[in-house]
Amino acid sequence: MLKLPIYLDNNATTPMDPRVLEAMTPYFLEHFGNAASRNHPFGWEAEEAVDYAREQVAKLIGADPKEIIFTSGATEGDNLAIKGVYEMYASKGNHIITATTEHKAVLDTCKHIEKIGGEVTYLQVNPEGLIDLKELEAAIKPTTILIAIMYANNEIGTVMPIKEISAIARKNGVLLFTDGTQAVGKIPVDVNKDGIDLMAFSAHKMYGPKGVGALYVRRKNPRVKVTAQMDGGGHERGMRSGTLNVPGIVGFGKACELCMLDMEEDTKRISKLRDKLETELMKLEEAYVNGSREHRLPHVTNISFKHVEGEGLLMGFNKNIALSSGSACTSASLEPSYVLKALGLGDDLAHSSLRFGLGRFTTEEQIDYTIKAISETVLKLREMSPLWEMYKEGIDLNSISWAAH
Amino acid sequence: MAYSEKVIDHYQNPKNVGTLDKAAKNVGTGLVGAPECGDVMRLQIEVDDATGMITDAKFKTFGCGSAIASSSLATEWLKGRSVDEALKIDNMDIVEELNLPPVKIHCSVLAEDAIKAAINDYRVKNGMEAIKFEESVVH
Image 1: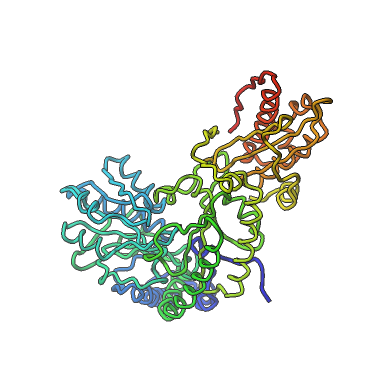
Image 2 (image 1 turned 60 degrees about the vertical axis):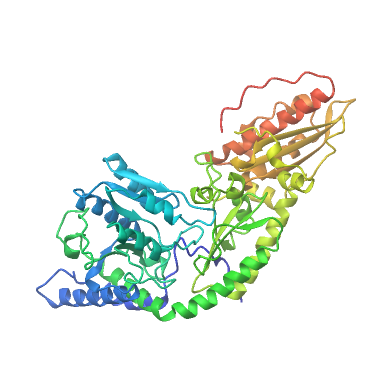
């Protein structure tokens, strides 16, 4: 029996894998110690558990356990990496290169850097959501200390050419930081093969718990350092003070181990479901996939249904299907998704978009239900849409002088 | 954000969706909003020339559930009213009837604008002067 509601918003967060919860439970109860307590078994057990988790996390991304700094999540990792590099490498320069489609945790951190005297270049992306490597190279100056480009985008799933980007960074003696939140655990990420110097990621996007993440900081070739952003007990090699979230870290480790084990199987199954969903929905007239279909995460698709507004569309089924839209129809923010706009989409198409994030627990039955529910709602709303009627009558919507309100 | 039951009901069972002959002399059409803002409403009224009563009203809306509900409700209220009475419909009446939250007030404003635009279209077609309305403030 199909159980409702269906969860298709796995880019926002994933449900925890029950195996992760099972691994965590003892660390709330009998093994509750502080990993920094050196003088008794409670502390030793906690430390041992953290060390083991650190290995599990490191293994997933091909890193050395010593290169893993546990954080509260990817937002903290983004902040620590960018602000930490900016402060640590101040004598080398003050210029950072990033892209317009980055997550707010990166963009707002970069804005902060600008406020305190740094210089930031924001690279545009093409309609596929990819940056131009030549533009990247041309943006590098003698004062450039960091390139911050995400591994994969949270709204459209576009995967950036990280290897090529890191080659450019290396050649020019610039560090590469990548926000790996959406990619790690979903596609193979290897910090050495990919040439990554720093990478932030988070447990709750890969079937682990919320409130825990990691920042990978390279220790060799080159040895990278970041200035701590929180003062305190000097945990995590002095880069991130604060008592370690032992149960969270244990869960994170387990989640990484499971991703490594299941990635191939999961990817095969989930991408097949994603493709089915996409193929069926694209049978509707005037439906468009946003971003690259070639360089894309296997579980994501973002589709615009022209002449239907996203929030209105969601209302047709959001009791039964959890999805997100690129439209924000509130008086506070009439602006649709900045990521979709960066692709060059008109506001009308950006307002008409839905983001689908499938996951480990998505079933074919759920996808079949979703295809039917969305198709029906799109058709119903188009019958109600004056724009659809004009389009069908062959009226060029751009020829109308709309009263902007 | 949770929608009120009335909004959900209008969304699921919209009243008076459709199109009247916009070339007809006794039909007034109001098209307001803009695709890039995420809302476009088209509201039409059919007027009995002899009595000045609105005999039919239809809408089509591109927008969120609150925008659809606001226009659906507006058509219900328009039918059977005189044109003069229709001018008295205030966006805050719609807000109250549908329990719209503050972030959705602009949907009701748009519906009021659509009513006024439809009436003016009817007036101009029939040799009357368009009424000058104050610019809507809430957007």
